[in-house]
Image (cartoon, rainbow over all chains, first blue to last red; front, side, top):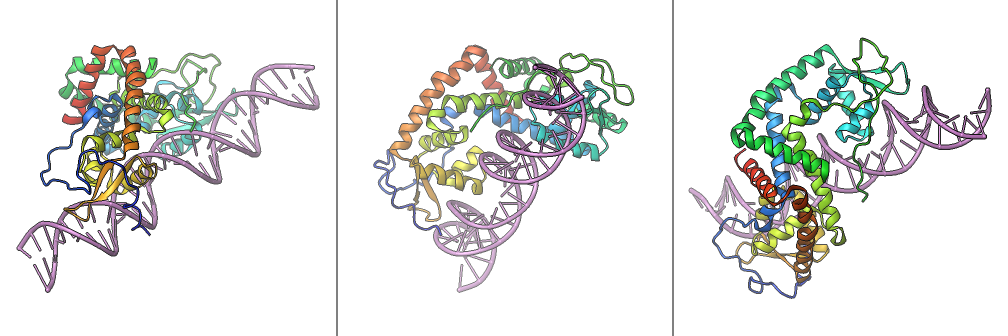
Length: 171
Length: 171
DNA sequence: AATAATCGTTATTAATCATACCAAATAGTC
DNA sequence: GACTATTTGGTATGATTAATAACGATTATT
């Protein structure tokens, strides 16, 4: 059902190329233009690379960055409930349910009804969860962050981290 | 298109949860733990903020960061086809179709059959597209990037950009 | 001429992200 | 104590983004 649009919508002016297109044969590299100056663009590309590397480094444990951050936060903040953990990570409560279902089904954490407020579920890691988290931390430190240190150097890595924190906070 | 999420304040308990339940009463901020040292985490949070701000700054033109980057690239690289542009931006060709449909329906760009290779569609901006792009660039420069310069300072901003480019390249 | 590769495209699935709403429990108010 | 409002976890649902397989048309390779 295609086959009809391209011809009509005529831009009044091609700007550079002739009338009806004639891409010269040579293929030089595409110019990024102002794109390389766009912080958001570089930020996103870098973030995707880093996440890919993270997943690769921790692949043996089958943990996503998000799952890792949840386990970390639960471990560091015993006695907190779902909304507290979810909010801290910027995860919406409805979306946090499936995430916890998954972690709980893998026996990495548990929900326990709070005695004080029987609406809320206190989160805590299982022994298994603590073990997996410890392994994950080790993999992240020795493989993932180590590689970052190689590429950036410790000083730059620290500076980068500081600036990102500034952005996430003051922006 | 509302754009508010962001975490709220949290309150609950400090201590250490024993075996089963019983969160004491009082609050205390949630501890981020090793999370604040995780480059990937900070990177993602910062990226989300920056994108939100970008969208806000250019809201009057109704352009997403992705659309802006496409327009920019087409403008800077006349005579290129869809796959070239898409690949450069890390967009998969199938997903690029809808994106171009949208931009073309808004008369910001056009697909033209190449004379050399009748399979491919050469992309180019319309006059309208060039106008919108120019306006977008101005908004981005005077509002978005200007704000970044305020928060980070020009030197830091440049350093940050450099490191992100390094990551996207050498990582 | 036959086969393989490329380009734009459709269709489809998965993963992320967001909103509205509900029952149960709690907090506040009168 | 009764009434209302709010909070918590949850369901259902929709929008957006991302990924894969396959197809017709065209070009490249042999």
